[in-house]
Image (cartoon, rainbow, N blue to C red; front, side):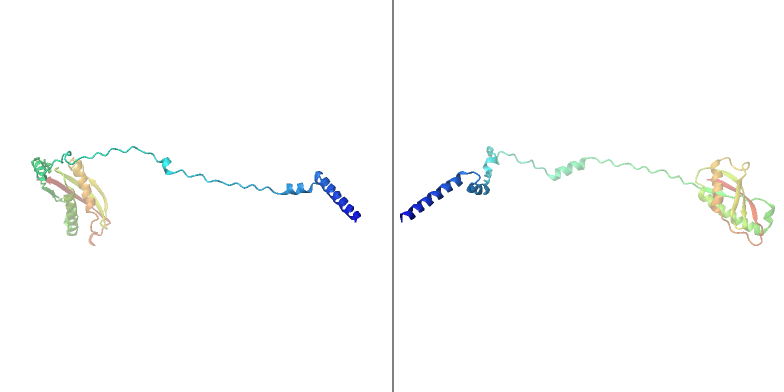
Length: 218
């Protein structure tokens, strides 16, 4: 009985001694390793910034003194009658622009074509065709003649069998020296062409004609 108690005490002392040795040795400190392997968690608590109140941003302006204007101190606008305004406008003289119209001078123009004595005039067919040509040239000259210039122009021209104008020439010696009349005479011949074709009795490739155009203003 005594032996068992002694054994238990000795065993207990031995266990305590060994436990103390294990705890003191750094390489055998198992508890420290386990404690070192544990993660350290740090929690941050973010505090919300307090929103600035509107009172900090609002500026306090001094109140303007309210001026109450009485209706008696304000003078009423002057009353203007409409009749007075229109009466003044009626008295203002209005100048009307003077319109000057150009004076129109009546021009009595006259175109004549004196007859020529030629040997071919004995043929009635030629004479009839010649009268047709003269009449067409006379009408064209009357339309083109617009100036107060008098004179005569002597013309010679050739017409082909189909009525086309081949050529024309002015007899300068017999004609008026005014260039305007010469231009009108040439233009009138071209305006009158083409002429009618030759009749069957006039079996010629071309025929020559002479005319005098007289320009006169009455």
